[in-house]
Image (cartoon, rainbow, N blue to C red; front, side):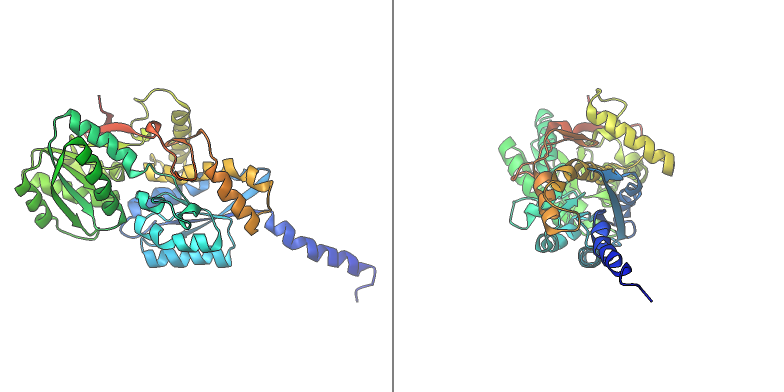
Length: 381
């Protein structure tokens, strides 16, 4: 039997327990560590143990889920993290199509979302819903501008474009249409394909018939390989460009000889030994060393996109804590505001400067011109 003297103490303990439990900052992570885009999702999942463990004096706990590269599963994972786990922020998902499908849930719940995806469509054009989304990869136009500038310098007048039939490829087609028009380059062939397609013969033959000076392949992860190998097998001799979606070592292995001479603009991580010293180089080198110590191999740049999301949150959390406690709508709103005010934050991919209009925040420091030479990535001279 409890004494009357013990009741007040027990009541006080019961009142304090929920508050103490909420002091922990909870961050959900949704990756595609299985399924068609696992080459993107695996290094992202593997990067979770390397994320900051605390910020502003509070512990950060990460809850990682796999969506199997399925947009429907990504929605279920998001809802679980928001409704059951009551997370303060979510990193993910890996795929552009999945990311587009969960934006409304991030916005409706007022939960900041840090998208490590390729397509700029997750943050552009800015809307009331997209103001809750921050993107940790370079926007397409930043990468595309570097490629088009190189094309112009090399005298390219006609271009073939092969892209995935999803938000990633669609946005690249939109961006390239404007940039090539301004540069006086004509797109003479525009083809698309599904990531799960097992043949690219039809699309590549149409591109070959147009005989463009160069071809750009706009596809993320392993899906970037087959269009290039097919074009090479069918005898295409022109310059092939890729987007930052191909910036992973399996592209080199799967592409083999067909990958030789490819040009892309992407993260400094691919050529870290060749770039000049900078804060981003130091951060990237530290991340790569820690990753390799655990997994025995260098991380793909896609993993760094999740790592950078952790750095963005670590930077924003102390400011958000001044306006709310973890687990509350006030904290989540303050965290969103603080992310939007990020200034000169060096990370693995470059330097972030967020604004209400720009939720990616990269400038030219977020890209390097790179080529494939002798089966490895090399800084393009």
